[in-house]
Image (cartoon, rainbow, N blue to C red):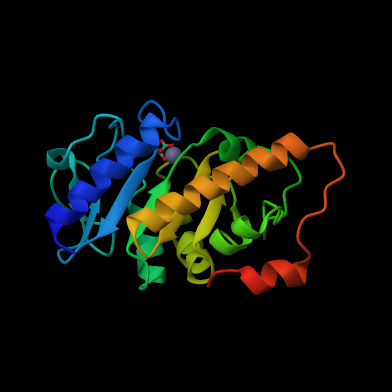
Amino acid sequence: MTTDTAADQIVAAARSLFGRGLTHGSTGNLSVRTADGILITPTGSSLGTVTAADLSLIGADGAHLDGPRPSKEAFLHAAVLRARPGDGAVVHTHSTYAAAVSCLDGLDPDDALPPLTAYYAMRIGRLPLLPYHAPGDASLEALAEATARGHHAMLLSNHGPVVSGRSLAAAVEAVEELEETAKLHLLLRGSPTRPLTAAQAAALRPS
Ligand SMILES: O=C(O)[C@@H](O)C(=O)COP(=O)(O)O
Ligand SMILES: [Zn+2]
């Protein structure tokens, strides 16, 4: 993909996420793999106002190549894209319900949300929970890369989701599904629930 196309996609997705309240303030970051490297949102920018000219280019190793200073999570985006050569984009948000789930005690570190619906099982599958690290702490890199080899979505403890997709549209769609399922999960807390069985979920899970 060319840098121009990737930039247009990032700006459109950023506006869409911000406009619907899936990011706020200067939280969240987006990246797309291009012919030249990985195009990523700059650090400290609002996804509501970021422009194509503001975007930053990093290498596959996460090193800054061009443009303004990249997101402090550039290392995480690069790690996920190295682990998943079939994926072309990564989305990180602090979307409210997913972030709320990431703060719950007693989560299953292998799968932080139950497969409440078939659509969630299809779009997310399992959701590993990564231990708390401060934002931008590159010591998370190796674990994130290893986890991403088997999962396209993960939840950062006390933080939010990181989701990749074949395209930016697919990654955004998966983040939306994760957010809605986190909301369902919190709405249902305290009510007897009947998630999909392990076999039903496994039959639908993405690779
Ligand atoms: O939570 C954080 O600080 C980051 O993970 C984040 O969401 C925004 O950081 P930048 O992309 O560096 O602005
Ligand atoms: Zn963040």
